[in-house]
Length: 239
Image 1 (cartoon, one colour):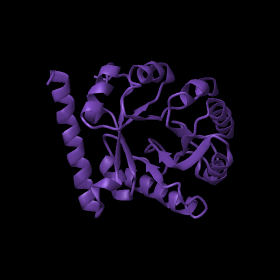
Image 2 (spheres, rainbow, N blue to C red):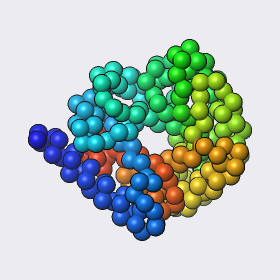
Image 3 (cartoon, one colour):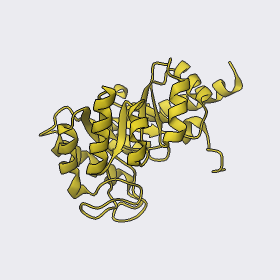
């Protein structure tokens, strides 16, 4: 085993322990929570190692990094999530490789995704990104739509050819009413998910929690956690 593989295996084991412990504390089964490893800024070689270690879901937030990385790893049994703010001029490329786009936050983006998915003859899973730091139907500092705009956007995704409405995503807000209150923020996301599932019963994905707050996300009921640093290490430039 190479040094890097040993390092990633050890980090992955620690994250698995954290998720398992959080599930136990919340009275949930470990199988209820899917780990997505956020591989942004890290090379395709790390993605290959993660696949060898059993990881099945990876995420990227920049198309210019993700597209070539996916091409290098096209032989691997992975599901790719796009989690960054997405500009419409990058949609065609993203639709070419992303199985899920977790950052859907405006109608113009839905229209662009639908158009390109139909042209590519693909079905793309979409999560509406909820901005809990935004005004009722406004945009958040880190993308996302305010609570008041979620239902309309979810309906639009569900009605759009080539797209599948799979659920909701959020990032714990750095400002506003939920600043420093990650679990309460994630519980609010779960409440929104419960309401939406009355009309979209299959949209049961709730993506919340990262390296620093995955326990709070699991406690709130998240189905997917997005972990980068805790698995891959501190990113270059962030040391």
